[in-house]
Image (cartoon, rainbow, N blue to C red; front, top):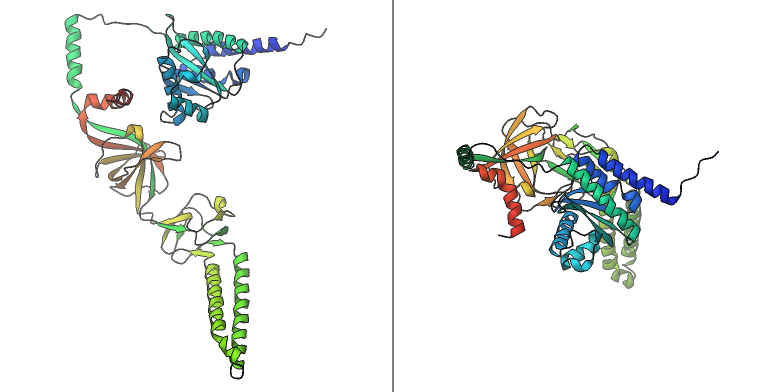
Length: 439
Protein backbone atom coordinates (compact mmCIF):
# COMPACT_ATOMS: atom_id res chain seq x y z
CA UNK A 1 0.00 0.00 0.00
CA UNK A 2 1.45 3.38 -1.02
CA UNK A 3 2.12 5.99 1.68
CA UNK A 4 0.07 9.22 1.41
CA UNK A 5 1.82 12.10 -0.30
CA UNK A 6 2.33 14.99 2.15
CA UNK A 7 0.50 18.19 1.28
CA UNK A 8 1.80 21.72 1.15
CA UNK A 9 0.89 22.44 4.78
CA UNK A 10 2.65 19.31 5.97
CA UNK A 11 5.79 20.28 4.01
CA UNK A 12 5.75 23.82 5.44
CA UNK A 13 5.33 22.46 8.96
CA UNK A 14 8.19 20.01 8.45
CA UNK A 15 10.40 22.81 7.14
CA UNK A 16 9.50 25.03 10.10
CA UNK A 17 10.22 22.25 12.60
CA UNK A 18 13.56 21.73 10.85
CA UNK A 19 14.41 25.38 11.45
CA UNK A 20 13.69 25.02 15.15
CA UNK A 21 15.72 21.81 15.35
CA UNK A 22 18.72 23.43 13.62
CA UNK A 23 18.56 26.45 15.93
CA UNK A 24 18.53 24.34 19.08
CA UNK A 25 21.28 22.07 17.74
CA UNK A 26 23.73 24.97 17.20
CA UNK A 27 26.85 24.50 19.31
CA UNK A 28 28.09 28.11 19.24
CA UNK A 29 26.55 31.55 18.91
CA UNK A 30 28.35 31.94 15.57
CA UNK A 31 26.66 28.81 14.20
CA UNK A 32 23.31 29.96 15.59
CA UNK A 33 23.72 33.43 14.06
CA UNK A 34 24.52 31.86 10.66
CA UNK A 35 21.41 29.64 10.89
CA UNK A 36 19.18 32.56 11.89
CA UNK A 37 20.01 34.67 8.81
CA UNK A 38 20.35 31.90 6.20
CA UNK A 39 18.26 28.80 6.98
CA UNK A 40 14.84 30.48 6.83
CA UNK A 41 15.36 31.98 3.37
CA UNK A 42 13.83 29.00 1.57
CA UNK A 43 10.69 29.06 3.77
CA UNK A 44 9.99 32.80 3.90
CA UNK A 45 11.62 33.89 0.62
CA UNK A 46 13.34 36.96 2.01
CA UNK A 47 16.12 38.67 0.04
CA UNK A 48 18.31 39.25 3.07
CA UNK A 49 18.19 38.89 6.84
CA UNK A 50 20.21 40.84 9.39
CA UNK A 51 20.84 39.77 12.97
CA UNK A 52 21.35 42.59 15.48
CA UNK A 53 22.47 42.07 19.05
CA UNK A 54 22.48 45.09 21.37
CA UNK A 55 22.00 47.41 18.38
CA UNK A 56 24.98 46.08 16.40
CA UNK A 57 24.90 43.86 13.32
CA UNK A 58 26.25 40.39 14.09
CA UNK A 59 25.38 38.42 10.94
CA UNK A 60 24.16 38.98 7.36
CA UNK A 61 22.69 36.64 4.79
CA UNK A 62 25.46 35.24 2.59
CA UNK A 63 28.22 37.23 4.36
CA UNK A 64 30.88 35.51 6.46
CA UNK A 65 32.50 38.63 7.95
CA UNK A 66 30.51 41.78 8.73
CA UNK A 67 32.21 45.08 7.83
CA UNK A 68 31.17 47.59 10.55
CA UNK A 69 31.73 50.63 8.28
CA UNK A 70 29.71 49.33 5.32
CA UNK A 71 26.80 51.57 4.20
CA UNK A 72 24.23 48.76 4.50
CA UNK A 73 25.32 47.92 8.06
CA UNK A 74 25.15 51.59 9.06
CA UNK A 75 21.64 51.88 7.56
CA UNK A 76 20.34 48.82 9.45
CA UNK A 77 21.74 50.00 12.78
CA UNK A 78 20.32 53.50 12.26
CA UNK A 79 16.91 52.14 11.22
CA UNK A 80 16.69 49.88 14.27
CA UNK A 81 17.66 52.87 16.41
CA UNK A 82 14.70 54.75 14.93
CA UNK A 83 12.40 51.82 15.79
CA UNK A 84 13.70 51.90 19.35
CA UNK A 85 13.09 55.63 19.59
CA UNK A 86 9.53 55.13 18.28
CA UNK A 87 8.86 52.36 20.87
CA UNK A 88 8.38 49.77 18.10
CA UNK A 89 11.33 47.59 18.99
CA UNK A 90 9.41 45.10 21.18
CA UNK A 91 6.73 44.34 18.58
CA UNK A 92 7.09 41.73 15.84
CA UNK A 93 5.51 43.49 12.87
CA UNK A 94 6.24 44.82 9.38
CA UNK A 95 8.39 47.93 9.45
CA UNK A 96 6.56 51.13 8.52
CA UNK A 97 8.39 53.92 6.76
CA UNK A 98 6.78 56.47 9.06
CA UNK A 99 8.77 55.11 12.00
CA UNK A 100 12.11 55.94 10.33
CA UNK A 101 13.80 59.25 9.73
CA UNK A 102 14.23 60.80 6.28
CA UNK A 103 17.81 59.55 5.81
CA UNK A 104 16.85 55.99 6.76
CA UNK A 105 13.90 56.05 4.34
CA UNK A 106 16.16 57.10 1.47
CA UNK A 107 18.71 54.39 2.34
CA UNK A 108 15.87 51.86 2.60
CA UNK A 109 14.85 52.50 -1.01
CA UNK A 110 18.47 52.19 -2.20
CA UNK A 111 19.84 49.36 -0.04
CA UNK A 112 17.00 47.10 1.15
CA UNK A 113 13.88 45.42 -0.20
CA UNK A 114 10.48 47.09 -0.22
CA UNK A 115 8.86 45.01 2.57
CA UNK A 116 10.75 44.61 5.85
CA UNK A 117 9.76 42.71 8.99
CA UNK A 118 11.21 43.26 12.45
CA UNK A 119 11.41 40.12 14.63
CA UNK A 120 12.58 40.93 18.17
CA UNK A 121 14.58 38.57 20.40
CA UNK A 122 13.71 38.78 24.10
CA UNK A 123 15.21 37.52 27.32
CA UNK A 124 13.39 35.82 30.22
CA UNK A 125 12.19 39.16 31.56
CA UNK A 126 10.69 40.11 28.19
CA UNK A 127 13.32 42.74 27.41
CA UNK A 128 14.60 43.01 23.83
CA UNK A 129 18.29 42.15 23.48
CA UNK A 130 18.34 41.85 19.69
CA UNK A 131 16.31 41.04 16.63
CA UNK A 132 16.11 40.07 12.99
CA UNK A 133 15.53 42.47 10.09
CA UNK A 134 13.93 40.43 7.28
CA UNK A 135 13.40 42.10 3.90
CA UNK A 136 11.79 40.92 0.68
CA UNK A 137 9.81 42.35 -2.25
CA UNK A 138 6.33 41.00 -1.37
CA UNK A 139 4.19 41.84 1.69
CA UNK A 140 4.15 39.53 4.73
CA UNK A 141 0.97 37.51 5.20
CA UNK A 142 -0.65 36.98 8.61
CA UNK A 143 0.25 33.28 8.56
CA UNK A 144 3.90 34.08 7.88
CA UNK A 145 3.92 36.67 10.66
CA UNK A 146 2.53 34.09 13.10
CA UNK A 147 5.23 31.59 12.11
CA UNK A 148 7.90 34.27 12.48
CA UNK A 149 6.73 35.15 16.00
CA UNK A 150 6.92 31.49 17.01
CA UNK A 151 10.33 31.17 15.36
CA UNK A 152 11.52 34.28 17.18
CA UNK A 153 10.69 32.63 20.53
CA UNK A 154 12.73 29.60 19.48
CA UNK A 155 15.69 31.77 18.42
CA UNK A 156 15.54 33.72 21.68
CA UNK A 157 15.54 30.51 23.71
CA UNK A 158 18.47 29.08 21.74
CA UNK A 159 20.49 32.30 22.09
CA UNK A 160 19.88 32.44 25.85
CA UNK A 161 20.97 28.82 26.15
CA UNK A 162 24.31 29.57 24.46
CA UNK A 163 24.86 32.91 26.22
CA UNK A 164 23.14 32.74 29.60
CA UNK A 165 23.30 35.87 31.72
CA UNK A 166 24.92 34.52 34.87
CA UNK A 167 25.17 37.22 37.53
CA UNK A 168 28.18 37.09 39.76
CA UNK A 169 29.68 39.15 42.52
CA UNK A 170 32.89 39.23 44.43
CA UNK A 171 32.91 37.60 47.79
CA UNK A 172 36.15 39.23 48.93
CA UNK A 173 36.26 41.64 51.86
CA UNK A 174 35.57 45.29 51.18
CA UNK A 175 39.15 46.34 52.02
CA UNK A 176 40.56 43.79 49.57
CA UNK A 177 38.24 44.97 46.82
CA UNK A 178 39.22 48.60 47.40
CA UNK A 179 42.89 47.64 47.27
CA UNK A 180 42.43 45.75 44.01
CA UNK A 181 40.46 48.64 42.54
CA UNK A 182 43.25 51.06 43.48
CA UNK A 183 45.90 48.84 41.90
CA UNK A 184 43.87 48.54 38.69
CA UNK A 185 43.32 52.29 38.63
CA UNK A 186 47.05 52.94 39.00
CA UNK A 187 47.85 50.42 36.27
CA UNK A 188 45.52 52.24 33.90
CA UNK A 189 47.82 55.29 34.10
CA UNK A 190 51.00 53.34 33.27
CA UNK A 191 52.33 54.62 29.90
CA UNK A 192 52.54 51.96 27.23
CA UNK A 193 53.41 52.11 23.57
CA UNK A 194 50.46 52.12 21.20
CA UNK A 195 50.48 49.70 18.29
CA UNK A 196 48.13 48.51 15.57
CA UNK A 197 48.07 45.54 13.22
CA UNK A 198 47.37 45.89 9.51
CA UNK A 199 47.79 43.80 6.33
CA UNK A 200 50.95 44.60 4.38
CA UNK A 201 52.68 43.68 1.11
CA UNK A 202 56.25 43.94 -0.13
CA UNK A 203 56.16 46.14 -3.25
CA UNK A 204 58.84 47.53 -5.61
CA UNK A 205 60.57 50.77 -4.70
CA UNK A 206 61.19 53.26 -7.50
CA UNK A 207 60.06 50.72 -10.06
CA UNK A 208 59.40 51.65 -13.68
CA UNK A 209 55.80 51.26 -14.77
CA UNK A 210 55.34 49.84 -18.26
CA UNK A 211 52.11 51.27 -19.67
CA UNK A 212 50.28 50.57 -22.92
CA UNK A 213 51.76 52.83 -25.65
CA UNK A 214 48.62 52.59 -27.82
CA UNK A 215 45.04 51.37 -27.93
CA UNK A 216 45.02 47.76 -29.03
CA UNK A 217 44.97 44.09 -28.13
CA UNK A 218 47.93 42.32 -26.54
CA UNK A 219 48.98 39.49 -28.83
CA UNK A 220 51.55 37.76 -26.60
CA UNK A 221 53.66 38.17 -23.49
CA UNK A 222 57.30 37.23 -23.92
CA UNK A 223 58.24 37.38 -20.23
CA UNK A 224 56.95 35.64 -17.14
CA UNK A 225 56.20 37.06 -13.68
CA UNK A 226 59.36 37.77 -11.65
CA UNK A 227 61.58 37.05 -14.67
CA UNK A 228 64.77 39.07 -14.87
CA UNK A 229 64.94 41.32 -17.94
CA UNK A 230 67.68 43.41 -19.54
CA UNK A 231 67.67 46.76 -21.32
CA UNK A 232 66.11 46.45 -24.77
CA UNK A 233 64.58 43.02 -24.13
CA UNK A 234 61.21 42.48 -25.81
CA UNK A 235 58.51 42.29 -23.15
CA UNK A 236 55.24 41.99 -25.07
CA UNK A 237 53.80 42.43 -28.51
CA UNK A 238 50.51 44.01 -29.61
CA UNK A 239 48.36 42.79 -32.49
CA UNK A 240 49.66 44.77 -35.47
CA UNK A 241 47.30 43.58 -38.22
CA UNK A 242 45.25 46.78 -38.49
CA UNK A 243 48.30 49.00 -37.97
CA UNK A 244 50.22 47.29 -40.79
CA UNK A 245 47.26 47.82 -43.10
CA UNK A 246 47.04 51.45 -42.00
CA UNK A 247 50.76 51.96 -42.68
CA UNK A 248 50.47 50.37 -46.15
CA UNK A 249 47.51 52.58 -47.05
CA UNK A 250 49.37 55.67 -45.79
CA UNK A 251 52.44 54.73 -47.84
CA UNK A 252 50.43 54.29 -51.02
CA UNK A 253 48.54 57.53 -50.43
CA UNK A 254 51.86 59.33 -49.95
CA UNK A 255 53.15 57.88 -53.22
CA UNK A 256 50.07 59.09 -55.08
CA UNK A 257 50.43 62.59 -53.61
CA UNK A 258 54.14 62.75 -54.53
CA UNK A 259 53.43 61.57 -58.08
CA UNK A 260 50.71 64.19 -58.51
CA UNK A 261 53.08 66.91 -57.21
CA UNK A 262 55.82 65.78 -59.57
CA UNK A 263 53.48 65.78 -62.57
CA UNK A 264 52.20 69.26 -61.82
CA UNK A 265 55.74 70.51 -61.29
CA UNK A 266 56.69 69.38 -64.83
CA UNK A 267 53.57 70.98 -66.33
CA UNK A 268 54.09 74.23 -64.45
CA UNK A 269 56.54 75.51 -67.09
CA UNK A 270 53.84 75.53 -69.74
CA UNK A 271 50.59 75.59 -67.72
CA UNK A 272 49.93 78.49 -65.34
CA UNK A 273 47.09 76.65 -63.62
CA UNK A 274 49.39 73.73 -62.72
CA UNK A 275 51.90 76.16 -61.25
CA UNK A 276 49.20 77.70 -59.08
CA UNK A 277 48.39 74.28 -57.57
CA UNK A 278 51.98 73.48 -56.57
CA UNK A 279 51.68 74.93 -53.04
CA UNK A 280 48.45 73.02 -52.36
CA UNK A 281 49.91 69.75 -53.64
CA UNK A 282 53.11 70.26 -51.65
CA UNK A 283 51.07 70.78 -48.47
CA UNK A 284 49.08 67.64 -49.25
CA UNK A 285 52.32 65.68 -49.66
CA UNK A 286 53.49 66.89 -46.24
CA UNK A 287 50.15 65.88 -44.74
CA UNK A 288 50.33 62.38 -46.23
CA UNK A 289 53.95 62.05 -45.12
CA UNK A 290 52.95 62.97 -41.56
CA UNK A 291 50.16 60.38 -41.66
CA UNK A 292 52.63 57.79 -42.97
CA UNK A 293 55.18 58.63 -40.26
CA UNK A 294 52.49 58.42 -37.59
CA UNK A 295 51.32 55.03 -38.88
CA UNK A 296 54.90 53.73 -38.83
CA UNK A 297 55.39 55.12 -35.34
CA UNK A 298 52.29 53.29 -34.11
CA UNK A 299 53.52 50.14 -35.80
CA UNK A 300 56.85 50.47 -34.00
CA UNK A 301 55.06 50.81 -30.67
CA UNK A 302 53.48 47.39 -31.02
CA UNK A 303 56.69 45.92 -29.60
CA UNK A 304 57.29 47.03 -26.01
CA UNK A 305 60.87 46.71 -24.77
CA UNK A 306 62.47 47.11 -21.37
CA UNK A 307 64.14 50.44 -20.67
CA UNK A 308 65.98 49.26 -17.55
CA UNK A 309 67.22 46.09 -15.91
CA UNK A 310 65.29 44.33 -13.18
CA UNK A 311 62.49 41.83 -12.72
CA UNK A 312 59.08 41.94 -14.37
CA UNK A 313 56.41 42.41 -11.69
CA UNK A 314 52.87 41.49 -12.74
CA UNK A 315 50.24 38.92 -11.82
CA UNK A 316 49.52 36.64 -14.79
CA UNK A 317 50.39 36.83 -18.48
CA UNK A 318 47.43 34.66 -19.50
CA UNK A 319 44.93 37.16 -18.10
CA UNK A 320 46.48 39.99 -20.10
CA UNK A 321 46.99 38.13 -23.39
CA UNK A 322 44.17 38.93 -25.80
CA UNK A 323 42.86 41.71 -23.60
CA UNK A 324 42.05 45.09 -25.23
CA UNK A 325 43.86 47.91 -23.42
CA UNK A 326 43.92 51.68 -23.71
CA UNK A 327 46.85 54.05 -23.95
CA UNK A 328 48.42 54.58 -20.56
CA UNK A 329 46.90 51.49 -18.95
CA UNK A 330 49.33 49.80 -16.57
CA UNK A 331 50.64 46.45 -17.83
CA UNK A 332 53.58 45.55 -15.59
CA UNK A 333 56.41 47.05 -13.57
CA UNK A 334 60.16 46.60 -13.84
CA UNK A 335 61.85 46.79 -10.45
CA UNK A 336 65.16 46.08 -8.81
CA UNK A 337 64.68 43.09 -6.44
CA UNK A 338 67.19 44.67 -4.04
CA UNK A 339 65.02 47.81 -3.77
CA UNK A 340 61.68 47.09 -2.15
CA UNK A 341 59.45 48.77 0.40
CA UNK A 342 56.52 47.82 2.58
CA UNK A 343 53.00 48.97 1.72
CA UNK A 344 50.57 48.85 4.64
CA UNK A 345 46.78 49.22 4.48
CA UNK A 346 45.77 50.59 7.88
CA UNK A 347 41.98 50.34 8.47
CA UNK A 348 40.25 53.56 9.39
CA UNK A 349 38.97 52.11 12.66
CA UNK A 350 42.54 51.28 13.78
CA UNK A 351 44.18 54.57 12.79
CA UNK A 352 46.42 56.16 15.43
CA UNK A 353 48.80 59.12 15.43
CA UNK A 354 51.90 57.99 13.49
CA UNK A 355 54.98 60.07 12.78
CA UNK A 356 57.62 59.50 10.07
CA UNK A 357 60.29 57.14 11.36
CA UNK A 358 57.89 55.10 13.49
CA UNK A 359 58.95 51.51 14.07
CA UNK A 360 57.29 48.82 11.94
CA UNK A 361 57.57 45.05 12.36
CA UNK A 362 56.55 42.75 9.48
CA UNK A 363 55.59 39.11 9.96
CA UNK A 364 55.18 37.34 6.62
CA UNK A 365 52.45 34.77 6.09
CA UNK A 366 55.07 32.40 4.66
CA UNK A 367 57.42 32.89 7.65
CA UNK A 368 55.41 34.14 10.65
CA UNK A 369 58.21 33.45 13.17
CA UNK A 370 60.74 35.74 11.50
CA UNK A 371 60.47 39.50 12.11
CA UNK A 372 61.47 42.07 9.47
CA UNK A 373 62.15 45.56 10.81
CA UNK A 374 61.23 48.74 8.93
CA UNK A 375 60.69 52.46 9.48
CA UNK A 376 57.61 54.41 8.47
CA UNK A 377 58.29 56.93 5.68
CA UNK A 378 54.91 58.18 4.47
CA UNK A 379 51.32 58.08 5.66
CA UNK A 380 48.41 59.06 3.44
CA UNK A 381 46.02 61.72 4.70
CA UNK A 382 43.05 60.39 2.75
CA UNK A 383 41.58 56.91 3.13
CA UNK A 384 40.88 54.83 0.04
CA UNK A 385 38.90 51.68 -0.63
CA UNK A 386 41.06 48.54 -0.69
CA UNK A 387 40.45 45.55 -3.02
CA UNK A 388 38.83 43.86 -0.01
CA UNK A 389 36.26 46.65 0.21
CA UNK A 390 37.57 48.32 3.37
CA UNK A 391 38.48 51.95 3.93
CA UNK A 392 42.16 52.18 4.83
CA UNK A 393 45.07 54.60 4.92
CA UNK A 394 48.13 53.73 2.86
CA UNK A 395 51.44 53.64 4.75
CA UNK A 396 54.88 53.21 3.16
CA UNK A 397 57.85 51.91 5.15
CA UNK A 398 61.53 51.30 4.31
CA UNK A 399 63.20 48.07 5.42
CA UNK A 400 66.13 48.39 7.81
CA UNK A 401 67.97 45.38 6.32
CA UNK A 402 67.65 43.39 3.11
CA UNK A 403 64.03 43.36 1.96
CA UNK A 404 62.04 40.15 1.44
CA UNK A 405 60.98 39.01 -2.01
CA UNK A 406 58.65 41.38 -3.83
CA UNK A 407 55.04 40.22 -3.73
CA UNK A 408 55.08 38.55 -0.30
CA UNK A 409 52.26 39.48 2.05
CA UNK A 410 51.89 39.44 5.81
CA UNK A 411 50.87 41.41 8.87
CA UNK A 412 52.59 44.63 9.91
CA UNK A 413 52.69 45.91 13.46
CA UNK A 414 53.05 49.69 13.53
CA UNK A 415 54.18 51.32 16.78
CA UNK A 416 52.98 54.77 17.76
CA UNK A 417 53.60 57.11 20.66
CA UNK A 418 53.27 56.22 24.33
CA UNK A 419 49.89 56.66 25.98
CA UNK A 420 48.22 55.59 29.26
CA UNK A 421 47.13 51.98 29.41
CA UNK A 422 43.51 53.11 29.77
CA UNK A 423 43.67 54.89 26.41
CA UNK A 424 45.40 51.89 24.82
CA UNK A 425 42.63 49.53 26.00
CA UNK A 426 39.65 51.85 25.58
CA UNK A 427 40.65 53.74 22.44
CA UNK A 428 38.13 52.10 20.12
CA UNK A 429 35.25 52.06 22.68
CA UNK A 430 35.89 55.74 23.40
CA UNK A 431 35.88 56.52 19.68
CA UNK A 432 32.59 54.66 19.25
CA UNK A 433 31.11 56.48 22.24
CA UNK A 434 32.22 59.83 20.88
CA UNK A 435 30.64 59.08 17.50
CA UNK A 436 27.40 58.01 19.19
CA UNK A 437 27.20 60.91 21.63
CA UNK A 438 28.77 63.55 19.37
CA UNK A 439 30.99 65.10 22.05
